Length: 193
Image: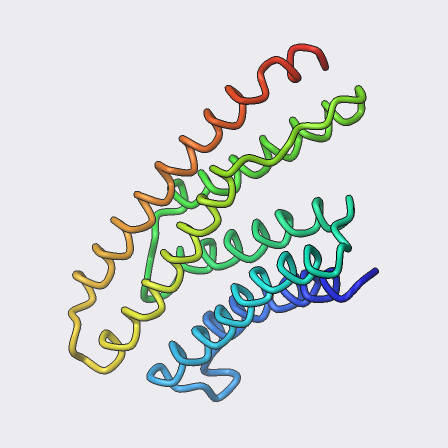
């Protein structure tokens, strides 16, 4: 374990707090108007620790196999937790759309595991980093739009339509990233099977 690993684990431990506050804000005594600011704070911690753990690992020359597995796992846990949470409450995203994120990550993880069991290591792709960045940006956008909505400046239908459209774009790129991953690693995948 090194400092970068602890930052990655921080993201994993923060991820369940997000749905707790969003879905049970009344129980925690959080007003609807304060909720977006708390969610934004949690998301900033997650995204900043994602940036910092990689930078720290490279600077300290502590890039490890554990980190290579934990980092994308933490990204998946964070983003899927957020978007699954947004299928409820004011955002009301369609569950089927959000499942695209979950299925993509399960497919890639399973593929990598099966190949690793046969001695073939599949490298991460730049498209995976772009996918994570788009999902992070989309989550920020939705939370930022909550602020004018909860203050009464943005109608619910417009808030939900913008949220839906932005997640649809993120889901489309997520599907593209699967194709890119399989195409780029096809030679190695065929060797493994």
